[in-house]
Amino acid sequence: MKYLTIIKSSHLKRAFVLLMMSGLLVLQGCSHYSAKTQGVRAKLESGRPDLALREFEQQSHDNNDKVLTHLHKGMLKRMVGEYQQSNKDFEVAKKEMQDLYTTSITRSVGSAVVNDTVREYAGDRYEQVLIHSYMALNYLAIGQVDSARVEVLQADVKMREWGETPMEDPFVRYLSGIIFEALGEYDQALVSYRKAVNVYKSTINKHGLPVPNQLKQDLLRMLSYEGLRDELQQYESEFGIKFNNADEANKGYLIAILDNGLGPAKSQHTIRTWAPTIRQRLKLALPTYQGRAKPTRAARVSINDQYYDFNTVENIDGMARKALEEEMPAITVRALARMVIKHQASKEAEKRGGGLIGLAFKVGGMVSEVADTRSWSSLPQEIQLIRIPLAAGSYNAQIEIMARGKVIDSMAHAADIKKGRLTFISDHWVAPRPKDLKQAQAAK
Image (cartoon, rainbow, N blue to C red; front, side, top):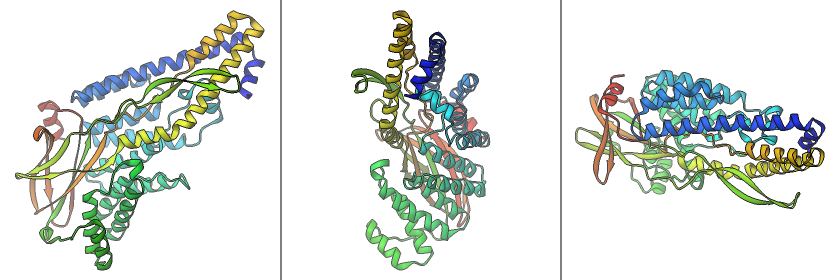
């Protein structure tokens, strides 16, 4: 009750003004952020990431959340093919996240008295890991594989920061193996593929994904390449696959990566719960993800009338919902503690200053109590991947989006395949884009 002591010892009128100002400022900021996010999402859902980026950049000067501002800018610029500019924004967000890793006392006090939005946004754990993945993918898109390697190594450090409960992301392990393989570091690639398999197994209840078939093939391929016959046979038995790479001799590989769909956005809902310390029921404002995830569209790569189906390798929607579920007990405890403090402050104000002052404190407390609905909501719903063996040469690869067995949209990518090398293409699909926009992006 130290915050109540602070309120009691200060002038009631000043305390009320501060509480009201804090609440109104928070509400104003949340309103602007919510409206901005809704507008951006609406444009993405209409197939116009270019307009979504323009709208966000026009409004971002009103946003005090530096991390979220640059996370969204980075993702939107990636969607329109501005990979280098995207990484500049991601770098700012990454450094700011690290600076906010240790929350200051001042921010903690503010969130305890007003609401959770007073705290600067440092990102959920899965977001703090994913930023490294997206920086690595951007580097791959512009041919800087060494820089991509740095990002996955930093992601490994980040996943280990949480000690006994590390944030293990199976896709990051898988992507690490692909990057090591692209650099010819086959021992490291094999270690990463093994880890990825184990993490997919251990996190299936959390991430909702079994071991992707493509990863199974990649692990078997690397075991065969390294000559580890006994281990190869063990995994062949476990996976129910007999590995044969005869068709891949003297070929290179196209790695196609697709961000499919749009991740969930938080909203606010209210509940009433019993507060035993004051023997009353109080109304709490809490964040939520409403509804279940919508199924993503089926996707494939088309090359010379051959079709290759994507594997889902990252369930971001599921990760986001699970992260909020795990955090909800702490969020609820903080919200209940705040409302108890505000209730007791209004009673004390009424006792000292009369009914009008007490009512003013009560209104101020309610005005300032809103849920923290901030999140990196421009992330995709899923990340999908496929590896395609091809003879050396130049190809036109089409990433095709399917509905009821028909192609509803396609995105063209030129790919130059070299023997024994990995070539990367990537895209982000939310809704069909205008033809002129796709042509402009393909030309970059």
